[in-house]
Amino acid sequence: MTFLQELSRFILDMAVDLYLLILWMRFLLQATGADFYAPLSQFAVQATRALVDPLDRLFQRKAPAGVIPLRRHRPSRWSFGALLLIVLIKLLHVSVVSWLVYRQQPPAVLTAFTAFLNVPGAVFGGALGSIRGLLPMVVNFYVYAIILGVILSWVAPNNPNAGVIQLVTEPVLAPCRRILPPMSGLDLSPLVAFLGLRIVEFVLVKSIIQISSLLHL
Image 1 (tube, rainbow, N blue to C red):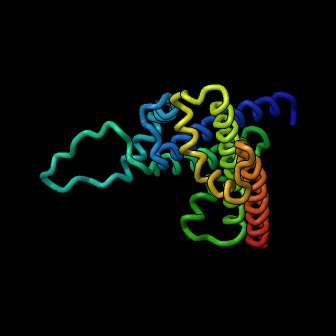
Image 2 (cartoon, helix red, strand yellow; image 1 turned 120 degrees about the vertical axis):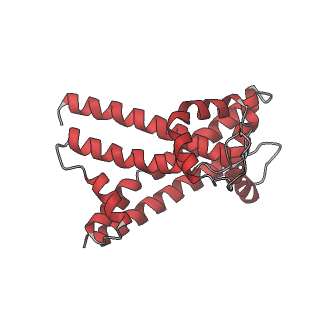
């Protein structure tokens, strides 16, 4: 690749990963029931509203005939639109990189359609290969969230975002506390969580790579 191609891909990768991280943050904040009016929650909603809200409406139940639904100011607990948008953006990202940087036929859009049609073989393996790029993003989100939670607990425990971060990371940290309980008032569960998240990421990525290689045969 030329310098311009490398720079273009770097900028594109950074922009896509940042937006996917915000989408994943919105999904988790809603799923865990975090305070909707906390600054962090409002940032995630406002930054993704234009694309996620129309998709979320596709998954909402329609009111029965003759019933006037009340306007809801809070989003539903499960933002399936955010999950769908994460997958679509990742597929589009792989396609754009293949076409602009490597001048190859974009495979991701094709594999998305063939996966829905249950087409076996190399095509489906390629779809798995493109989706596996989402796993490090999920792991990194929890790593950053845990680090931010630890910092806030030290320097600003009364910060309105501290409770939101704690609510999101607690499902990961709680099992770690059973493995390594606090010692002398020091909570070491984040260290266990970091190690566990990286192990899970390694195992899942390796498994997907092996499945993809088998489907290429």
